[in-house]
Every structure is written in structure tokens, then in C-alpha cells.
Image (tube, rainbow, N blue to C red; front, top):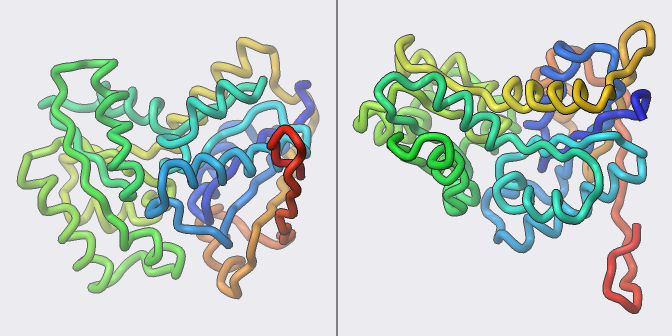
Length: 277
């Protein structure tokens, strides 16, 4: 299904950084995005709840006949990637494994720091992914629960966010990490401020281009690239629409965000216990 769209989901706005990279790297591809804003943040929720939400998001995208899905959420990637891969028969790309590969290639002193949500840190997903690539790399992960709310509010620069970031970066820099993974798709919008605080010698790894690179490899193998002329369409669905969404979402996307549709999940339990959209 080369002309089918690519599906992307996240707990909120952060996944639009992945869409931004997709539209840059694969401009002809149609994209359907779902942001589960009504239930964010995922990073403070239990693994089972994140898995359930991720399954619902995937089913929503499947109803849009997507040919592949990018889990543009680190919390969902850590809690639900394996489950979704085993349940749904289409290519599913997470953001953790690709970013881990790029970080291992980038580090010089084999010390990698991870900034992430509480759920991602608790899952130990990055350490496990990096250990499979190089067991001699030291990984230190630090939960940064305040960053997603700040980014969702559009607070990306200034003394307030610098103070919060300094607190989170201190334990990483104390351990002399030369590479830091931005382990949440919201964090790339803070890249400029983070780089200012850690210095230019520290390499920052953004999971968006890493995940898109893996998707390109899969589409190449499956001859799945769109052959349409011109730029592919882009649809945005959300479970809630705060007043600030269009303005802040445009910053994530790097282009105006106009046509956004709000959807509500309505389910019923069947006799065999499956959810039905």
C-alpha cells in the first residue's frame, strides 16, 4: 500500500517533532497524526495504563488505513512497543531503539545520559537497548517530570526553564556524560537551551531523525514509498483541543497548524473482551 498514509501517535504535542522530520525526509508521504492530549502526560502513568492507551491509539490509526506507525512517544515506546509489534500486522517503529543506536555511535567516552519521563526511566528501556549494542557503555537516566508541562505551555527559553533544566542536568554532567539522549519527543524544542547549559562538546541525540531513518529503511525494503507528485497531505486528530494547541503545535511542527479534528473514544466490551472502536 505505497499510497497509504503513515500513522504517528503521541500523548500530546511532542510527536509533532517526529512529523516535522517525516515531512522533511519523506515529503511525498501522507501522514495521519493522533495526539492524546486529553490523557497526557503518559510519563507519570502505570505501564499497563500506557499500554492500554497505546493500543487504543494504534487501533484509531488502523481505522485510517495506515501502512506503518511511528510511536512518537518514549513512554509508549518503553511500555508498549513489544506488545504492539506482536498484536498488529504492520511495521511499527519506536523512538528508543533508533536513538540508542545513534547514541552508541556518537559517544567518545562511553558515558551516555538519558533525560526522560518517569515512566521511561522506570522501564530502564534505554539502558537495556544500549546494553544490547555495547555492554561496556555506562548509562545514567534521569527523570525530568516538569519538562513536558513547560513545553506544552510554550515555555522554551528564559530563566525559569533554565533553572529547571540546570537541576535535571546537574547529575548527568557530574558523571561527565559526553552524549545525552533527549528521551522524550517534547525535549527537542528545548535543545537550544539544553545545549547552552551543557556546552557544545556534549552531543545531544534527538530520537525523531533516528526513528525516521529506520522507517525509511523499512519502506525501502518493502518498496513502500509514495509515488505521488507534490507534498503529501497531513491530518491531525486530537482527543482534546486546548486554546494554545494551534500556536504551540505550530512551533513543534515548524509550519502553521490549521485543520485539527477532535475525536472522542467510545468503546463497548464484546463477549471476548476486546475493545471495539
